[in-house]
Length: 270
Length: 270
Image (tube, rainbow over all chains, first blue to last red; front, side, top):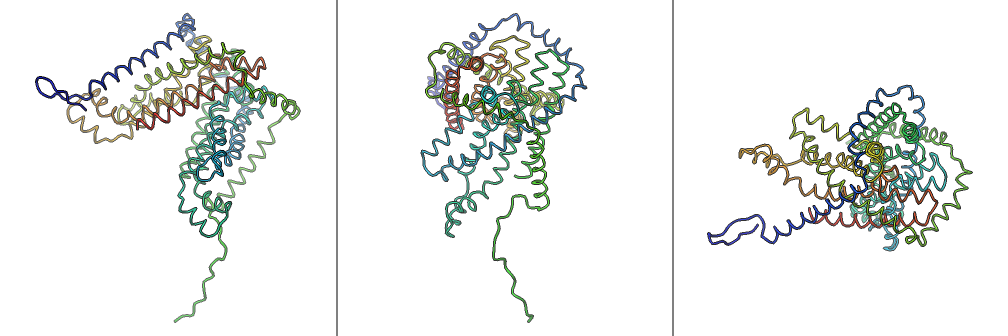
């Protein structure tokens, strides 16, 4: 807050003139960036298609109803595959994330260099989307559920390890000290001092990630990595819109159920 | 005086389990084992194909040392810039659209029908991954970054409006009441009582969403939504692993920068 001296006496203002200018300048730059980005995007856009989108959407919607319920028989297996990709992928990710998390936490890491390496694993796993992991794995080990599982696992390591190492860093050090005072070794200290403190967080993280993974594994099929995405891709490319709407409903249902399960479990733990 | 027998204290100690009830714990393990057996039983892995892929995987890993940035530099730069513009504009537009939905989805602000409508919109946009939204955007608006921009904006609504609504529901009612008692209109009330309370957190979340949108912008390209994902897909389709490696490293690098800045900014705002 600033008081500006004028000839009529002091005048109260929220900001000084300088602050006002900074804010104005910030807005100017921000707006310029937005307008500039929009221009670049619109240069690459065929506006005819955009103006036409309303009719297209109505057309598509009218072709999507009613969903072709009989197609459901072909969907049970893909749904099962999708759930398996998410679940087994999460399990594999947890198995790999636990050691990484212990190496990355400041209070359990053996050496700062090891910590840096673990942090790099976490960042690179997190910054690449599971669909891109799947794209790579399909190119390398061939299409199928297996590539999807590995993709989900590789993507989830970073997420799980990050949340886990943060909760390791937040533990109460007094308990670990107490265990150390009994003459416990390094591994005993971990097992009795650290692990019991992070176990609830660990369970919470796994269920949370499982929920996200269900959502992500529904699209892995688009690049050939198994699950319900395969059917979605096939239905869209054959313009079978009644099947597409059914698949979307199934995806919606699966995601809602998994979200409900994960919320229940997390509620029970915490 | 009665003759009491000395109490037999246990001489060994076991860690208490996370789930206290023995029956529930064993039941969960048992159910999980059955599920795992079923799941693993239905996954058919083509080990022959996987073995075939291992040399290709090694070739891919070798491509990272060093990655080939130069030979496709033009298209890489083009893709990266397109992704960045797409990220900026979809974050801005997405957040601008989230504000009305967020206000409408706050229980203490909106009348019941508005609340339900806004919650439904948010739930739907949250359920479908950005990639599925992008597929439909591509169908409606044609190939290119405009479709990606639409998909990311809708995805942003689901994320941002939900958190905004939750933040508004958690606000301090005393301040809101104080403003209302001055005879403020609804807009004045939102502007002076609600907005200052949620602003710091919302700025932080906006930066965080910018970060997410960049990651997702790498993915929407795979289904035709423009950006670096399209370049990456081309590189994979041509088995140009060294260019793909370069793109991946660039993505990781940009995400790292974004994550670092967004963490710093969020700390600075709060």
